[in-house]
Length: 536
Figure 1 (cartoon, rainbow, N blue to C red):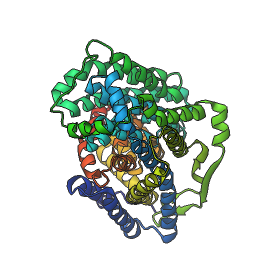
Figure 2 (cartoon, rainbow, N blue to C red):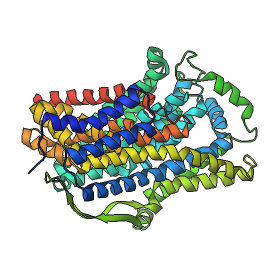
Figure 3 (cartoon, rainbow, N blue to C red):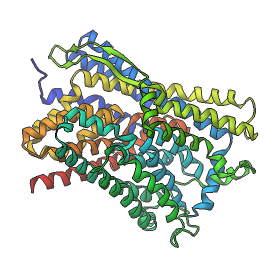
Figure 4 (cartoon, one colour):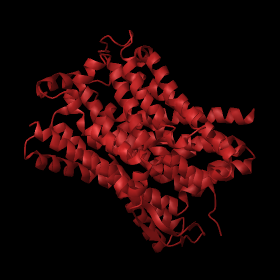
């Protein structure tokens, strides 16, 4: 017996996602309120329509809690780091210093929201680019809502080959691409082409948010150069070394943005007074709070520490291998629904390497940053109590939302609901399904808050579908992981990280509403190009 792929079953599987989007994007519910309801609907669907037993659901819920814990290991320390830097008023110092280095306000936003967050994604990932980038943009005077939106779309292009290519490796392992090197390189090439398109759209979107046509006109030369380095550089490196394909271009772009800021076009002070994303009143008031003896480099010390620790641990292979061997994971037995949908037994589910985890790097950066600020008397001796209290207060609602989203995705995935969604689209569309291949990747990333998980969830499905439809495998798989990267802009975990560190928890729906057109538009563009290519 197999799960019936009918319109009714497809609509039932779609219901939790539709409800979530409606509550968050239309009704403006916060994630901590919408997520539990989505979870409840997915649970009811699993029991009544997808014939899941208590044992299966119990194990999937446990898997969800463990996966959520891995995300929260980034959320909690990220909040702590933000509070440490905020207590020292270092964000204001950093903003003023960046203004002196880069007097063009749009370039400041691009430098932090696109270039620096991409660099962080190249080495760390796991939400760190949003957790770090959002507060920095807030310090530049960007309104909280846009301080979250900009890094969400700014870092996502590096999601496939970033974090030293963990999402790419997951796709390779899931589809067996390592056994066919030629197809592997072709898939990497297609993925890089699609991602480059998204990368360029990202830069243009940030400029558009800043100042519509005027913003795009002002920023276009810089955007084209940065995109050439990031997207073009990644495309070339995917044919040589996928592990560093995002990190090296992202690092080069970091240097290039400062050279660009010294050019004749961008060396002069420029800002759009009517920019809808900037809050002039907040930045003007913040001038009075600046510690006079703190330099911009001193203000940025915790982030220097974060970058150094990450590079030291992750790029020096002997250290990475030694520390990475200490992993914690739990075994789960095989489970199956009455329809025969099987979840294979796993010896160690989603093991966490605590000593190479981004959460540890954030904790160490927070502690070292506080000690450094304390030595210079920029924070009081008892400030850690206040920092800890504020951090703890912010973790509770964000934790509820993260757990709700991820447990919901585990229940949907473990009972076959997610597969029905994908197979329903494929069986209905026929050959034209290829246009929706990026949307499947996007769906997986949205549901799991991870491009890597999306590739694990749908990689083999996309491969099988391509073979059934007798179309080339490489473009389809490239579109899968490109769609997963695009979908990372909608990742509930990342959105919650941003709203928490900028103090606007509960406004996740507004953020989702503004990002949805960008993400879906990018996925449609990739899908149209894919369809046109394969039908020629």
